[in-house]
Image (cartoon, rainbow, N blue to C red; front, side):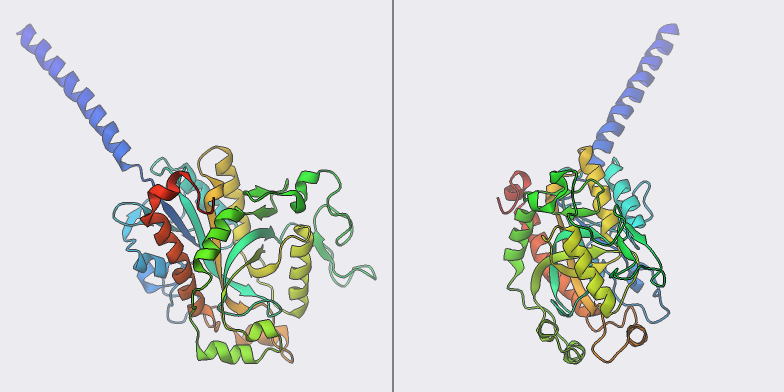
Length: 380
């Protein structure tokens, strides 16, 4: 009897150990190693379960075309994130809504990077979303591969009614006692963007980021000839502007993103944006687009890269110009705010469609030729 009990105990122990091993193997098999991670900042479509943020009929958001076009129908919990990830059948592509604004993306990206269900060390990252653009050097419908991301929020501010005479503005980059002193960098030459190479780089305060230029140039060369969506409404809006750049058809371009959580608008603010981008990048960046999101995303990526969770050289940022950042001549900034609603921008749908068209070509190239791009980055 004791022998039978002993045998049963050994059998139970064996089964327990086998179950533990099997569970460990099952867990290992569940680790998702996406080839591409797609990030969008907001979503307003009914398919996503949203009725529309502004009361009107819901329209597609920044993930809609990706989810539908790439068959991303699987839902996966992300520990510590506000949203679930979406994935295709084999997990080679995942997508996540990380916004709104700049703080939410930092939290959601960090959560994704630390979740043990995902191995992102060899994943390519594609951030995508709509943006404003300046009629001085762009037009609605433009699709822009981003080289520099510049934080426009870390600043000193004095009310405009109290600024000293001779100051161009009471709002200027933090770290100085007056607007835009020269030289900008006096302590550390490595903080000067003129000295940066083509790799993923950022300054000490993590307010200026430069993405891998070789990867960016590869993506641009692959997509620069794309014929982008156009509409009569876009043409009518462009016709209101006297600037030559604003009147052109949309095209694939390269330029800098100014990330500031204030939804700013107007001729004076457009001038501020150009000056801020030029100053903070030491003259190396050309202002192209503006939104509220990307500064937080870049900080999160830098932290994850520091701990080997991601490869920061595999990051791309694509922005579609949905609207101009200032009104045409004769229209005040306040009037323009009334004329345009968030989902009524003339370039809203064309920008989303263009992002998917241009970005989708890059995603398909990376996924379909994964062996080629797994160890050797495109453009090298």
